[in-house]
Length: 136
Length: 255
Image (tube, rainbow over the protein chains, first blue to last red):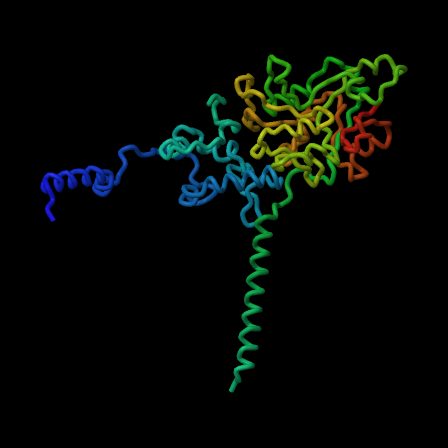
């Protein structure tokens, strides 16, 4: 069998495959993204309601559980081992605004960092008020 | 030497016991997690009595309405068609349509009556909700979950008291001040009075009850014979709005 203009076709194919798989090669050589979320953690609070790793991955589940607990089951406070958790002498409520955003008081430097990075748009703040005024 | 039959008996018996203990201990630890140390005000049947005589003495007083609407971030719209209201006033003959009687005392006929969600014992609004965004709690409060409301407005149609308002527009631009203790709502959900369920769970009385300077609003447990509501209902004659509909409203008006 004779392939007419074989070397031209081969070179073209090689260039095409290389170009087509360029994203794979780029990712293999430099997997690091240039833009990274920069989280600013609160300075005055050392402990969160759950471990940092858990919060990183499952804070949305926790918030959903809190929502159902407060709104639907009428259980308002965070309970650990039968006792209500406290922070600075105040009972800890299962509340996005009154508990989470008390410490993480700057939404732009905390929540938005990852949410923008991953392009997720939670609608929490359509209703729940972020600290310092309400304009979104 | 154990024979095969006895061996199986012993092993399955032991395994069964082990499984049973694990299961019950799991159950116990789970119930411990869900059992909140009792906090907040609890009741078997929350209800309210409104003293119309006291209310009549200061007809321009709007303190309860202002307190409720500012606490719950209820917006003020220019167009009455967009109106959101949790607690409001209307004339006696509008509030008590079936109590109409041409020979009522003059003052009563044109009196403004305080109106709010009646937290019916047999609420028609909850029956029609397709998402269970509104339901009757065990303590009688007809509660709303704005996370679940899809804005179908069946409940608005079902409520015979006009207690439910729909957010036709985004409420945020129409709020001058925000109370950070309470969320706002968003366009496309229904809202109404919740008997201040969030305040009760923090051991506070409803905002309107707390704001009334003359104690015309009496709130308490109907199931408790020694509660203030029961006492006042036992001593004074009271009426309810449209009781003939079978909704069994739990807001009583002392006349």
